[in-house]
Length: 185
Image (cartoon, rainbow, N blue to C red):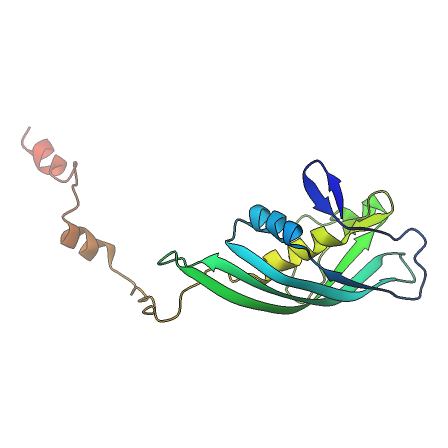
């Protein structure tokens, strides 16, 4: 762990990474979990473990990080604000590059599909911050709308006729009688 401006980091040097994979196994400390909790604005995070490997690809020299993340996160229920616990067990793949030109998108109208890999992250100073990568993977694995068990399911709204809605709500229509007023002149 390295303190840098109030942030925590776990840097790994990848400048001399060859074709053989470099394995990693991270157990995130309580202090690091608290930093992630604060940055993600969740209630709690514990038991964060990440393991995997880094390997340099042949043609473009990019570094590919593959692994598995396990953790337990607690978020607030979107309905009742009660704590909702979520077990995270996800596999991930993240691409890194030394070349800033790899980050540029050539076609601005390009649509990225779910099956396509994400664009690579830039390697700064020859190092990858594994804790930042773990934090990002936790954020991606979190349930976007956590709900406490036992709550009634949300009722789906029907397609409503707007004229009917206006009649039911008694919507004020300030120009409704304008036509009648104009014809009286």
